[in-house]
Length: 98
Image (cartoon, rainbow, N blue to C red; front, side, top):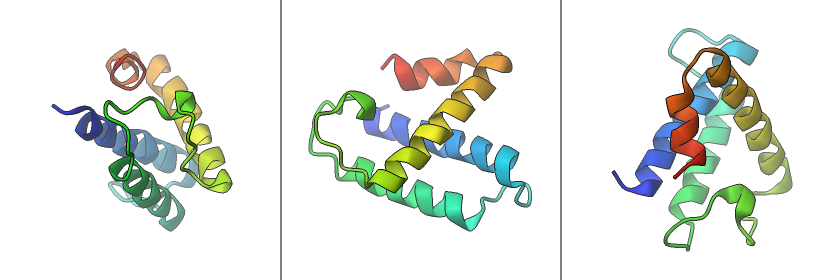
């Protein structure tokens, strides 16, 4: 699987977990704010000019607007801790060790 495709899967999963635990939308859905963040993050990922794509936190070009960057950091931190506590280290490895 290509790196960008794998990163899309991880983004969807992390944002979905964050939304379910923080905003409690109906099961299988996301609130409007998280859906907007996911759409924005996927668009930024698609438009990334680098190949291979670096981790966003290590990139010299910050393509996220400040408010979105802050929100995605919060999502990644919360969901990362969530997966560690539940023994789902495979999701963390997919994100951090690519």
